[in-house]
Length: 379
Ligand code: COS
Image 1 (tube, rainbow, N blue to C red):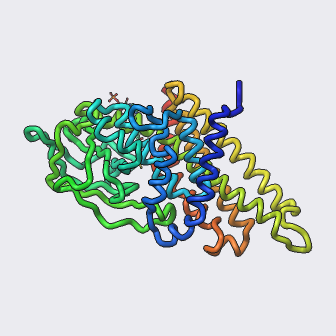
Image 2: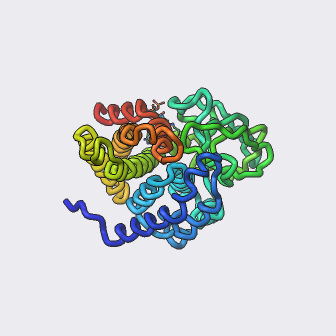
Image 3: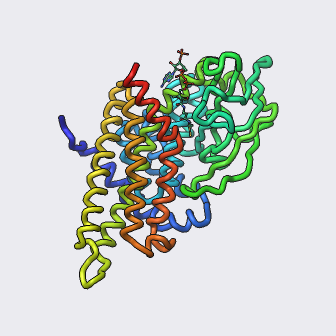
């Protein structure tokens, strides 16, 4: 058993760490305040090869492995969870299903520009009555000649109208429930495809989210992803791996908050000594560091399985469940260590705390992760 990272992974971490410190961190609080997504920074991530980190060079990617991607997400989320969410959705939820289930034409048309960062990707599964219960999707897709006609409304779509490519799930046969769901690739600008209002969120405020609206939207038959009726299984297999990227985001948020709390505990003096010298604070820091390390081990181990093409649905749910709970706990305690300073927006810990909450909710709530893990244990 070897717990050390390879030289390439260490170098990659160093590079993304430096990039995040220089290009992302300085404007993170401002963008959160303005609730503004930065395409400019996304383009810079593309310049570094991050938007296609997982895909082969012949498809416009950087030829990295899944662990490299997880480390990159961790480092970006350490300074700005919104951009972590943007990149996670772009790669895990949009590019991944096209890479895994797409035809050669679909990969050429969509995956290459996604990998090179010319296009931004999104994923659209959730509806008002289909959140945890994915099989209850109401958006319909009816085949008429060489087009499917989509009608319906999707909610909470990360990357929203900033994206150009959308992996969308719709029902082609409502009677069959899960077995009647199909996946489609949609492009911004298709007739009958519009956007609802931008959501005002508690956290990850500089990543956009909004509704997608389909009104008699014709989608060419060649944009069907996988086979008709295969959509539910595509969504589940995408989430099987995608959930570990939320674990990496949570890990990055926790790490960022911990580092802030540690340096504050060393610098802030009360009763003539640094507050870190008080056992109440030092034990809090010890617990935070220990739990972050445990979350990191779970998340990297899931990446190890994914890199070897081994089943990792249960492990992915475990790392997401654990890392997101740790992110919440660590950020709450980091804020506590900052005291009153933690509660004002001049310091980043309140942002970390707001950002951490979503990791317990999206790509399946913590309750859904427990359900998935329990089903694996009991099957
Ligand atoms: N990979 C491949 N196939 C899978 C699968 C997986 N991980 N999980 C289930 N399936 C298959 C099942 O084998 C079954 O196939 P058959 O009909 O051929 O037997 C089919 O899909 C239906 O599965 P199941 O009956 O388990 O579906 P449920 O409706 O009970 O839903 C849960 C299962 C709750 C786990 C699923 O709906 C889920 O993950 N919900 C949360 C969704 C989510 O994460 N939403 C966030 C959106 S992204 S922000």
